[in-house]
Length: 378
Image (tube, rainbow, N blue to C red):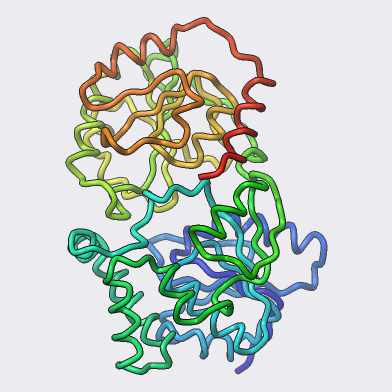
């Protein structure tokens, strides 16, 4: 049975929609209540739910087949939030039917945060860490290539020759794998899209950085055992979950962080896809709380690695520390913070200096720094 929709939004996991898609749905329905928006995803974790969409479907129910899903919904437009095999599969199929494709930038991208180019080493890492996702994307590639074994083999052979997914897609499919409109944070992100994603046949629309519009909420200090201690918010990210960092690397950092708990109250703001089991040793201390609210927590200090949400922390508070999980894994935010640490540093001492440093940086200066950062060409 056909279910015609106006916009079909795509993301790999259902939790991914919570970043921007849900808010976009709300704004669309405010402007045009009659607009029907559908969400399509591959992965759903236990307990995951999503609001805001008129219809939600798991792509696995249609064997990950973009043709069948587009036949079902007959959308007027498709919106993606990344450049993955799943997104490309829908983009190519939509353009074959003259359906408009929109892409929304979902982060301050770094080339090191995704495995877009396969090497013998990264292939082994991907199979170990993301085996399920690897075979799902293999299926998407098969569908992309009209279910032809020979075409799929040639396609993947190019990918395995140390070429990025973006290079191979443009070589094989040309401009039809480009979005019609790309919504980006700032003017200079155009060069990133053109040089990294080869988006040369798209119209760029600048929308600013949505993270700065997030609502704020004060942390309830009385929820901690000792409310007199400063509240430090750790901004967790999915480097381990995405196969970019080894578990042991994160474990060593969390061990160092646990040694600081005599001097601080620790609040963890998880990523929607965070594996909370990785943090169980911290929870056993009884001195750690998890931030469950949608609003961004107002804390005395923030710790992060290279997650894009660090921009929000920097915007609020100069007391933001970047901890390098690997010495050579340099965060894009480092030029804008006063505190950087890595495995060989005494994290406890650095935290103390950061928390009790009385130097003030005016809000206007923070705004200017963020503007320069967001516009800087990667």
